[in-house]
Amino acid sequence: MKGAHIYCSWSHVVTMMCAQILHALRLRLGSLFTVRPSTMNTLSHANKVRDCAMAEKLFWAMLSHLQAFSPRLFEALANVD
Image 1 (cartoon, rainbow, N blue to C red):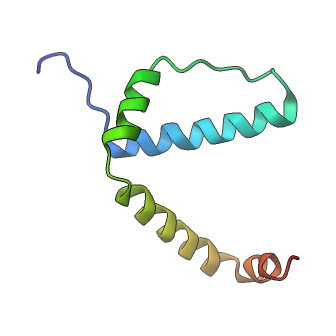
Image 2: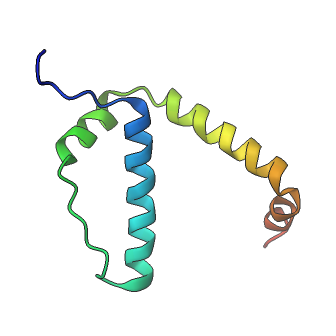
C-alpha cells in the first residue's frame, strides 16, 4: 500500500520502553512528563496482533546479558525478603 507506515518490531519495542520510562518519571516527578503519543491506535493494534514471542525472546536475552554483566546485583536481589 502506497503511503502506509510500517510499524516494525524494533519500533514497537522502543515505543514500549519509552512508555515505561515516561511512566516511571511521571510517578516520580508528577505531571511534568505528560505525553500523548500520536500513534496510540498503531501501538494498540501492534499489541493485539504481534506475536509475544519476540518480546519474550528479547526479555530473556536482556536478562541473561544483565546477569552476566552484574552478577552480584542479581545475587543481592535474590536474597531480598
